Image 1 (cartoon, rainbow, N blue to C red):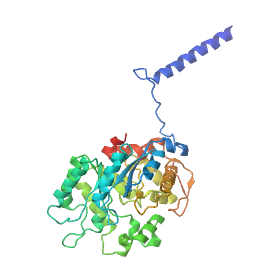
Image 2: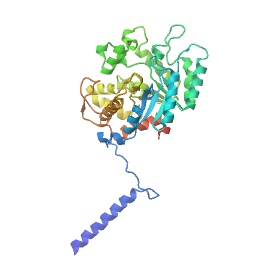
Image 3: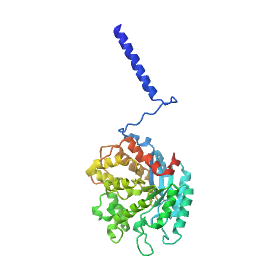
Image 4: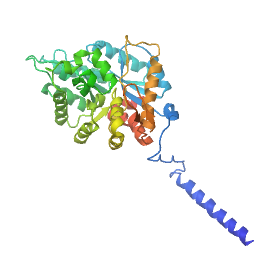
Amino acid sequence: MKTLSNQLAFTIVLLAFLNGCNQEKKNDTGQEQTAPVSDTAKYTMEDFGSVAKINTHIHFKTFDTTFIVQARKDNFKLVTVNVNSSYSPSIEEQQELAVNLVKLYPKDLAYATTISVEDFDEPEWEQKTIAYLKKSFENGAIAVKIWKNVGMELKDKNGKYVMIDDPKFDSVLDFMEQNNVTFLGHIGEPKNAWLPVDKMTVSGDKSYFSEHPQYHMYLHPDYPTHEQIIAARDHMLEKHPKLRFVGAHLGSLEWDTDELAKRLEKYPNMAVDMAERISHFQYQAVTDWQKVYDFFIKYQDRLIYATDETVSEKTPVDGIGQRAHENWLEHWQYFTSSGKMKVPDVEKEFNGLGLPRTVVDKIYRENARKWFAGLATLE
């Protein structure tokens, strides 16, 4: 009887303990609480489709729904970015397309407008640009993109290259800040652009600058240097410390996490997107995986997932969704797993980062919402 009593007492104590644990899982209203995710918990490849994600930098340059359909399948929301490039449709055409797509897919898509630097030397350029931005904001634009022609193509009436810290941009940037709209800056190019093709670090840059020699700065020693363009961008940030700025393409500092870290430390109003630059992290991880991992952990609130894929009349529509899906899966593998990987852009093998779920959620979703205020429309 004594043994039975001891067992009964133990059972009562255990049930009381478990009941107490269950009570702790409820809030003041008696509703169940979700247990917090461990800081070390990891996602797997099987989680890819179930996790809500945002891709903040793609380009729609023609009407096509294939890409949006694939994004829905893979649980992505998208931001299409207008661009003032010489090989894109006119700004007006891009604007009309973006507005119409957002109207058709208001829960799937948002857009960033852009500005023209045509007639930059004219006295009314600032007023015209602000008027255009005002109309864009009324049409739902959540950000404003500036392109690399500032610093690399645009010249003033005296033949001098115009940089982003030119005083003429100040009133336009102030207007963005007043309207709580993010400034998305593609300023400069990867440092590879100033190297011979055979010295470039990743295959994507070798291909791009071979096909676009006008932006291969190694061939144009009379153009501004990488250092000059970055210094002008940094000066712009010093002049506008309250402007919410996202440096496209890792802020053109993709080549060294230390250099990027210096800017993130110095400019708290700056974050960066990873559009078409993830391979540069992978290249650095070949020789110093820990350095790249530590960078992601330290700056987990400042890194935004983006890919820079383009849908245009020149894009083969057949298979575009599958190609995007495979690209997104490859990125997911890099961020979530820690095994050996090999990708076309990087010559040697490297290890995936195997980031905690909390960090992955920030990169893929939470940071986008933080740095692009208008993305609340995609809830």
